[in-house]
Image (cartoon, rainbow, N blue to C red; front, side):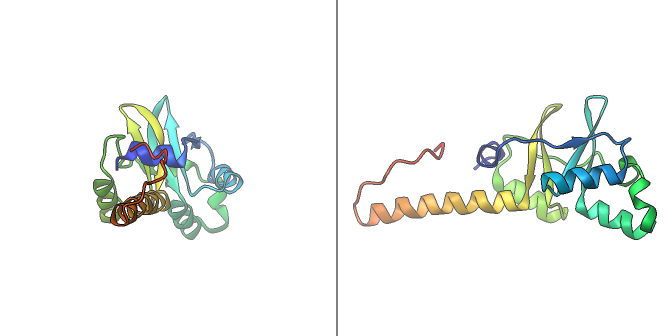
Length: 151
């Protein structure tokens, strides 16, 4: 399975923010949209990533004043990213090795989406369920109902 297939399962809704905005504005977007990350874009290019981890660190560092800090001051600058052709095993390894719960997907300079570790787990579960169904049908010599899994 490739990253592009995970994006197809997940959908491609994107949430971005300018690095010049305040952390309070970023938190508001994250809370309203029920997302754990925002991609920071500046001048048409990805400049960083804001996740709840950076929010917590900023709250710890700045206390009650954290909301007025700019996104640029707390975001992860130039984060690692996945590509649409990346295989899921490589994606999981990158996310585990670098302690990343959210990973932007870039096709050149174009943001394709953000994949969370939850999205990866769901995609793997769906793929395994499909494979199990196929194997059981094969073992029992029964026809399998067709599924639109992009396989």
